[in-house]
Length: 409
Image (cartoon, rainbow, N blue to C red; front, side):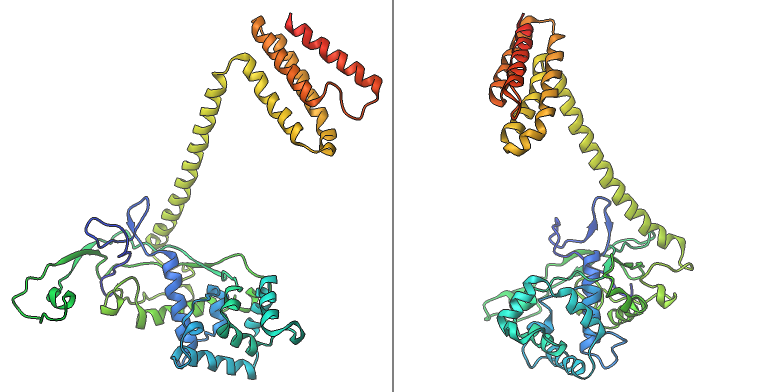
């Protein structure tokens, strides 16, 4: 960093001015979502506002970063520079259709979007060409809302190199009563300013930024796979020159310079010449996050399993037999007639197993309770299997009643 970096200013903090720390490690970091946002803004500016686009076009922005219905060039007034750049691109595709936009329109054309387009333009007009679709995007909010696309890139959280240290910076408003008053006050030198302290990362702090492709859209990825790294490097240069990182960039915070390393590897993380510590800190944090998440999930599962086992062991013998059997009976009763025929054999096996288990109970009272409850269950599901002949059904019922009577002795 060439200037102090301030990020996460809106986060809760005891002194009101927060800072972004990576939970649960307490490491200062730049969120991947925020990096994706600033890279997207740089790409949009290059594509629509700059004479030298460095290869960026609006469809490439949508392909790599996803479609944003709230983009400035879609909702701005017609006389804004964003709209002028957008209209210039529409004029370009009138003369030369864009291949990336062609694939995007095919991917975006879901049933919801087709329904909206038919409502606005009528089914008799057929599919829109590229210029007409771009104009419709800007004109109709419902069309923009029907487009959903994540984009082909994901950005990782960025942490500073291990040798970094934090610092304290200060804001010192000298004329508080003038700025916050009723308008009758005037600024003067007799005021007593109250300094406001906040944390920053000092100049000299170094970050590694990393972006990787997501699972690819077969028809779209071949159009960008050979140039996405160079495009991101161009965006990074634009951010360094004009935008900065973090908060308070309008007053000079977040200014940075680029390290000297191969252009194609600045964001891909593939440079073999990068110091080992740069790769290790990112890898270590990512591994720790995944390991911590896995460990917590495993501990929760083990605790839940231990609690279920302890509760099961505390049950009396009759409850250990009746509870799982009751669940099968309830499932059978709730099933349709067709399903009952298929699951009846499994229910019969469960009933027979319960009889065998109950016969091993030494306490006669518990055995009789199991027999009484099973008798109620047979009354609900039927003593004989449905669909069998009358003679067989009579034999089944007689055999099952005799088994329960034997259990009561």
